[in-house]
Structure formats: structure tokens, C-alpha cells
Length: 221
Image (cartoon, rainbow, N blue to C red; front, side, top):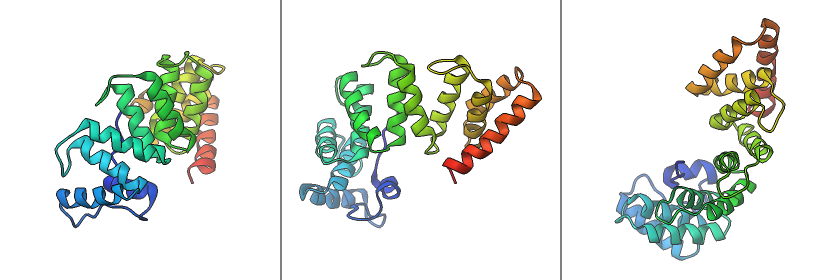
């Protein structure tokens, strides 16, 4: 699971207000700017500073500092910092692997609408990591993420439908979801769509294609 490293990418998620990252500055300059803002209490700057310590950008990599700043930001409600803490604990990066902690932080981010957190939390429910395996919970989380345009969530939701995990087996829904994910560049979804199509009638494929157009119009346009 990849952490969301804020910095430039954070601006699209949070907007420009109070951002401490400036493309015109050096990495060291941005570190100094973020540290000053973080120490003044800016949750966004704290999350950015955590990322900089995490990857060693503008400063020597320091896992403890990264976690400390992520936590300060997360406790102020930063969905991205909450997500990054989830990755830290689920992957055992910079901290001892702790699925319970990962679940807790992913859930906080997911409840704020974080699509990547919803997806990762769904994976943990599928695999029974830190929670009792629960396909219905996974379905719910994948669906929320998928409706935000998250292609891996769309692809995994398709797998749940084709296998009948947490839902009634439905090749039409699986095809629909894989078709949407494939259009976003998910190669595995394209392969799966073509495989399941071989087990479907022409009318079923046509229905799946119609549903895909409707779903995209409703959720992604």
C-alpha cells in the first residue's frame, strides 16, 4: 500500500490555503517553511512535514519524526495524515506492524471520504487483518471508493461480484465494474473483463455496457 506523500500532490486534495510547499524553493527551503508552519499548529503543514521526514526530502529521513508529525496532523483531523499512519502500521514501515492501529487510522480517513483509505480498509476486511473477515463490509467500502473513481476499488469490487463474496454472484456487474476500471487504465481489470465476457451472452454484455455508461454518468461526471 503506497502512502500518500503530500507536498505538491496535497494541493489538489486540500486546496492552496495554508500550504507550505512552494515549487520555487529548494527541498531544504520547503522543509524550513513547513517546519515553521507545522510548529505554529497547521495540520496541513504537519502532514507535509511528516511526509518530508518519511522520504528524507529536504531533511535526513527520520521515521520517528515522521510518525510524530503525522500523528499531530491526524489528531487535528487530516485525512491524509490518518491514511499515512494507516499505511505505516499496516506495512510495518517506521513502526512495528500493528493491524489494529492501521484499522483505526484507515477508518478515520475513510469516514472523511478518503477513497484510498476506503480501499485499503476494504482490503483488510477481505483478508481479515486486524478485523474479523467481513465481505459485506469490504463491499461497502470498495463501493464508496469506486464511486469516487478509484480504479483498484472498482476492480476489486468486480472480483467480489464474480466470486459471489458478500454479494450474489453477478457477471454483469463484474463486467460493468471491470470495464469502468479498464477505461481508467487498470490492465488487470481489462483482462478480467475479457475473461468473464466469454461466459456471458451478447445480451448480458450489452446490459453490462449500458450499466457502465449509466454508472459513469451518475458517479464520475
